[in-house]
Amino acid sequence: MHSTESTLPDAVILLGRGGTGAAARETLHGLAQALQMRMAESRVLVGFIDKAAPSLPQALDLCVGARTVVVLPLLSPDEPALTRWLHKVAMRWRERQQAGGPSIRFAPALMAAELLPELAREQAMKALQQADVAETAGPQWRDDPVGWSNVPAHTHHALVCLGPRCTALGAVAVWDAVGDALKATPALQRRLRPLQTSCQYPCNHGPLAIVYPEGVWYGRLEVENVGEVLRAHVLEGRADPGHLVHRLQSE
Image 1 (cartoon, one colour):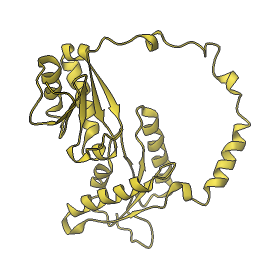
Image 2 (tube, helix red, strand yellow):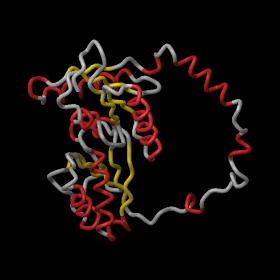
Image 3 (spheres, helix red, strand yellow):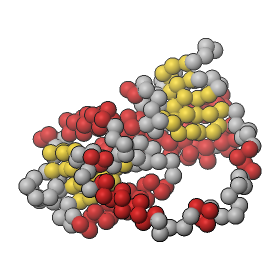
């Protein structure tokens, strides 16, 4: 990568929301591939603000050696407070790099793009060529899965934060490690239901998780320790003091 700031950036990071399913991630990767074909001299990468990896710092790690990096946030609607925080994330990442790291530029908000109204009109006109929802929903559209009415037998819930700040601190890997812990410990799997949440706010303690019904907050969770923290809490009734942040109920 040897471009200059007057031509193409060395790298472009498409930054989107992760979502809880694979579709959002696949869509962003597809867009990155299409953009890569139009910017062959640049390296086009993806990054996620929350609920998926790589986070923005992880995507920036892949840009080491670049001179100019453009971050293109794909947010709709635009969130100025979130954008300001992303600038801070980029500054903290660059502060850790030798010689200051690359120049990092944030693209203007997507919703402010001049071509967006015309694109929206084009998509609306294309909709007139699509089938009515009555033709696509299927004859069984009123039927719901039986499981949607059944209350699970779990005794505990672990609310794992995958908000933007925890994601930047490695929460996606922690979430995956929770799943690994459940598979490795059947007794834990029977009793604990992990759930993703958005920001829980004490971000400086992240990655965070709250275990209910006791209402115990754990922080600074890592891949190596989250399984043991949950096993101790759920199976032994013991709060890990090294990761305890807050209790909602006294014991």
